[in-house]
Length: 262
Image 1 (cartoon, rainbow, N blue to C red):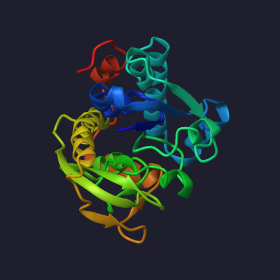
Image 2: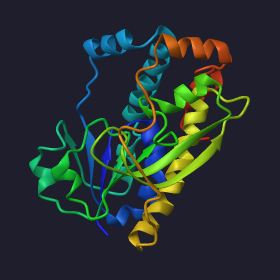
Image 3: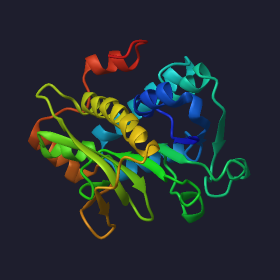
């Protein structure tokens, strides 16, 4: 089975992708990294305008920590690619790239926090589709940072959905959904770290079942169903204040910059 990975690289993408790469590295044709979003003052300002200060500082730290680890060659998908000697390319438009076109059709695509929208031609070039992980119980909580919204609401559990990408936002055929407990001591950072780890291992199981034609979609997530959340804004701020939950703590910060995974 031939597999192509689509990645917007970060520590969280690394946690999702690690079990898949370790298990299926011999099947991976290439890793497609997105360079659509580049670091710039204007981009940082755009995030600041859409969100509020606490989220902006949290997001900025996550980005800086990912860049720090990337510079040191660790805890990124790029570091896994080097370890397993996998081919990589960077693209700004996944729907119009000659290097990718030369490798299609393929058997399966897998997206890890990929920040580009797949269109018909690419979607139809994979026999088993492009598989994605969205951290909610689709069709509920579509959109940006669903775990952060669930965490801010005070939810005692969060969900993760593994699905085949279709046309539309977070829409397609759902293969597996599972629940993850929110612990009393959780920060948003620690919770999402755990969600990514567990989702990565569940994804390996879904790939195995798809490879052997032993799984069928459980339901269809339609674009007209469910609800959608945008960037964490003042509504999110009020929910976080009401719940008393935290984005990150000192232990998380030390861990994010350390060599070891926990």
